[in-house]
Image (tube, rainbow, N blue to C red; front, side):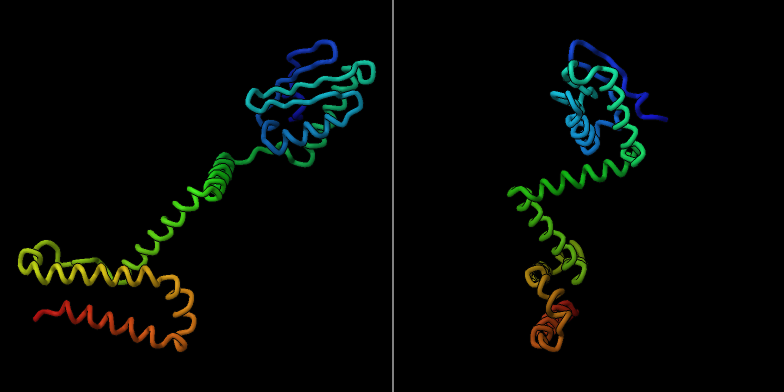
Length: 204
């Protein structure tokens, strides 16, 4: 269907017309295209496309460009944009996704957003490190009541290992795994740390 049929004339007075426009024309990029192309027409003085109200307001000099000529040129512009696929409606899910991504990008560019993003990444690294050492205090409350001292020491050991892995996680994934021979001493310290951790968990 021709997009021109959805541009409905709502107001006309000396040198001023206003059209009700469809939702497709209110997308930021398309609205800017329409405004730019109409504004360069001979006799046109101003063009405003109010996306929220879905209105296109055009002021023009009738001695240079009459209403019929203006409408003809406007519809020619709309037909050209339609031929190039500018009015093709995109899936709502895709539009919503792009909108959310744009908001996230702007949020991350702010100082507060950058701080929260940094903390979020640190939290993700903590979870990844936790998966490596397994669940903390897997014996549960029973071990605490049975031997509080050993349960407390085991818990603190788990916290220490978790903290060390979290602190060195970036270097582990980006340096130590890439060049294990170069960082052999670091890997020896890691294996020895896990040996002590497993050994402390063995029953007496």
